[in-house]
Length: 324
Image (cartoon, rainbow, N blue to C red; front, top):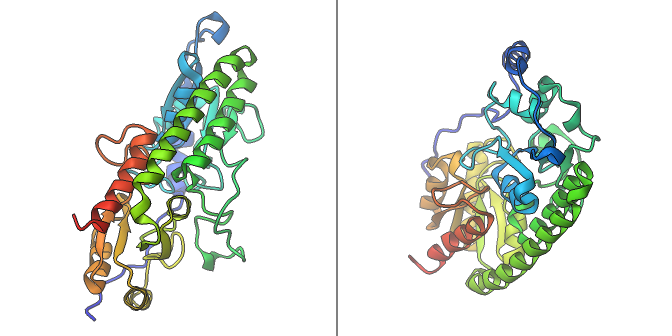
């Protein structure tokens, strides 16, 4: 077996130099910010979200009462979003910060929030909206250890890929917005009802579309597929990474290929930000094919809504299963 070269580099971490630069910039970023009208005065609730999915949900729940912006872009790794000085004033001005939680963003967002010096969005305050509070996490490590990976110590944080969990996330957002602006509660709850009814209808369509995927075995690069897989009946067999955030060794790749051959695994899911080389090599050694699997809204051109995200992933795997 002709093995690829594997570089053991950590994916994540906060540079002390970047933190110092952000601290130096915070004063400049926030100087001269004029006051703005409250919601009662015709203004909007300023909401910053960690990822685009949460921005999509918040716009739909908040309607014309909110102004929403996502820090991460859909093509980026949600665990390792580049820390930009431009994020600081956005966080400083925000009335609310909506996050996935389960430490999904801790490697980059926590330092930015600290630098932004906005008490409204600190953990425990009304403007901090953690969408994991009503989620039952999957794949919780039995032991909290560096050996188990850097990224999922509280369980798998990629629950946005299950439409049923998306409804719970939207409910948490509606409750959070209601805390910030109680007079808007009827609007938020009405929009939540509309969102839930739409997702329920789409889920029926998606489950029908995904029938050929039931029982299909696959491996992915990162441990981010379990919620999607269990909802639509696929069988997760392993990852190219050794553990979340820990790159593969050659020995791990040999074991993975052996397992795939033994179990007839013919699908490799590739998250775009991890690159093509290793997924293609694994597929070439096992007779499998590679399907693109998006983690967030915006992960591919034209995927601008949550519905388009789910449909893209279903169709991407279907194309392989159907031999297209």
